[in-house]
Image (tube, rainbow, N blue to C red; front, side, top):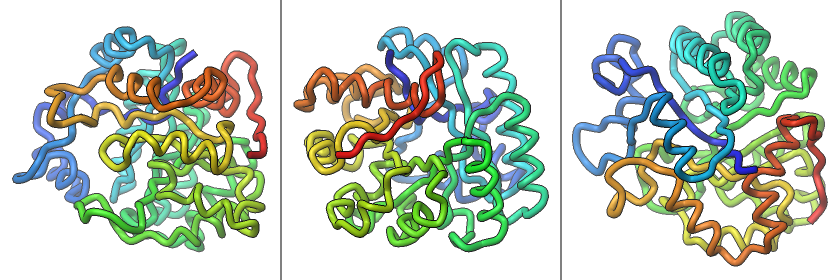
Length: 303
């Protein structure tokens, strides 16, 4: 089974006029990433039917729709409503995480509960740096507590601490994520984009001893890292806490790709020097256990 753990999707009116849609909602940060006025356009666009068609073409069985790290609480509600509808229409193919703005306080907590009760199965993708909250913000701590209590995974956007400057790369402290994992040892924590290279710091014994509840997804990997990242991370922490995620509909190969697809990245993973068992875990078994798909339960194996 292949499960893409990191997919984004927007309603048709967003793709039709992303700048107008974002301007009406005050979501300037999102539109400057998704539809910049100048520079290379990495964002592709898709709709629910095209997503399912592209999944079929690549042999992707299921996809996890992730929310965006919106500035405004009202935009979170809007996206959660899209996802609730799409998951109900395609329960055998789609799962979805709810998004919240932790700075909204009680309203964020209420939205968390509403979206989960309506069928969504996790929280994220959130971004402390983008959404303006610290790891110790009371609103965020309450969301983390609720997720841990309900056994729900939380996906956080993590920026790499060094590398090329780009609009989406804000200053993160990897220490914050280690603190979070230590504070909530029962929280199923997914750190996106290889966790900004945090897996390699797990080779530090003190760090590694606190990260047993942390998973890393591979979203946008071809835009950031060479294919050898797969072998390197598996050698560092083992294959059981790595989740295949594409960041569809980003164009991961912008010089070769006019529209987004799943095929190219899956081919890259297939050629990454992983064993059959390692690939099976990364491409689907780890996510199946984490989400409880088909009765599986998520277990974490030491490297």
